[in-house]
Length: 631
Image (cartoon, rainbow, N blue to C red):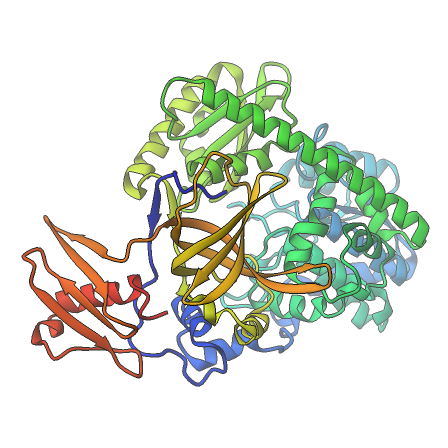
């Protein structure tokens, strides 16, 4: 959400001396983005753009061979086995992927996914005992298992073989299993280091199918890999990137009836898909089931062979997704009302508890509160017998896992990673817990500062938003975690028109030096005014409407445009302004002037000897970026 009234910290990109990566056939602003992201050589960028397949997994996963040997035996003998997944999109797509492959290869697999509400996360001893009673002697976990110590010990007692495929943090004591397929067991610079659960399942199934000379067994596995990888926000680098890039070319023509049904219900048509289509259309329909329904529904959908059955299962997923949206909206409205009705200042750490809130969606609402208030947030719901269960989210820079560990003496259970986590706490300990989290968040805010942190990566004029730039962006696809869509900024844009849209959104027509572009702001507050001339940050998209395609700027933040830039240094303020398209003037606190120009290779030059002083040169470089004289 964007609010002009909310305090903002704009951190403009670091200056670049000269024109970077000039041998790369991309528009200069895109080369600047890549250079600032650390791709400083031609070889770095060519590696990003490469379509090269990842290396043979046998050389990277030390326990892959025993896992394959046990699975080949199971497939050749028609053995009954269980795939123990998780209830998020990564776990459900992983489960479906292995079920489809194992069935085709001759085994007799069944799904075993815990209930979010009844069982909690991951494999548990009760599941192991139940599966053993059904005759199962082989379990394969996907997207869970490494932390299930008690369940693994029970499996060993019952002589049930377990193959663990998981990407969550390994415990200090290695888990007991027949084999462990985990990214952390690969060499340090392995391209497989960023695989999510579905990536590990894909590698396992693909290698098994090829070794058994049955490539048809993984006919739709790449499609499920694509969905699960994007849905789990796995980093789109290394093997994830190369496998996804190839998979997206064919996903819209998937042979999996369940995937076809999801695309039809999402209205995606028959065009090639991009990662955003998965993240915003397909993944929510899958995740919604795990949040408020039975995850077996998704597994049935993604393993269905009949098109009509798949469509009906997909329709049920669609209904649950609409219910999930309604639940989220209702809880968000209630949470905001609770905060607005409290006369005390907003706490450094937002913690709200209501017994009737739904466990499955409070994490989504916590993320919305983080976006709205730019501070960590936890939502708690009743968990029975005097306990509450929470989901936690935080802005970048505040480590959720470390904060929970710091307060671990007050918690019954907790876990997570830097951006998100969860915990269970006694009701009687909630106040003390909030005090501790507030202290941690207050220290973090003191260092970071209040308000929305705005960090654009490259400057664009509206005229530069053209088909050449769009073609360059397509070369950098797919975008996602670890390789986000570039955040551009433009300065001095006039707002010609404003149009309110349903849902609280607003469409703008912007003009700069005779060029007009359309922009949109999602969830814009009705009472918030937009200045007549603005600087803005945005991501570039295309809007398809009634057969017409236009560029669209999805605005992330905006501020009033000031032609004169001020930089505070010590007790003084330096004032800077442009002098035409390639020059700038700096006034020091004493009012003395220094003029500098940008040469043809993008470097600063001046006849004034003061410009060569390192302190002054640094000021000039910041002014060059801030005034829009370089990308």
